[in-house]
Image 1 (tube, helix red, strand yellow):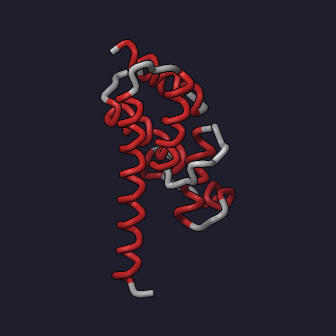
Image 2 (image 1 turned 60 degrees about the vertical axis):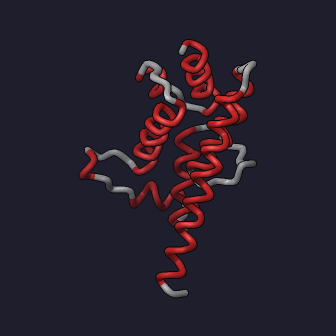
Length: 140
C-alpha cells in the first residue's frame, strides 16, 4: 500500500472518530433530563470514539482504555508497549498516562466544563469520571 493511501485511511479514521465523539457531546448537551447513567453511557461512547476503540468495549478503567487504544493504533501488545515506553522527555510520563491527561483536557474543552482538577485526576474509571462530568454539567 502506498504512503498516500495510508494517509487517506488514517485521515478517514480520525475524521470518523472525531464525528462520533462530537455526536456523543451533542446527545449529552441536548438531554433535558440528565442523569448520571445517561452521562455514563454517552461518555463511554465518547471515550471509545476518542480512543478509536469499539463502542462495545467493556473496559471501564481509564488507564486500561488508554493502553487498549495504544495497542490498537500501534498494533503492538499492550504489555510490550508498557515495557518499551520510555517517555523521558515528559518527566518519565508513560504514553498511557499522557493519553489519559489529554482525554481529561478534551472532556473539559468539548463539554465546556471546569470541574476541580483533583476530581478529574482522581477518577480511575469511566463510571467515576462520568459522575465528575455529570456534576460539572448540572452545576453549570
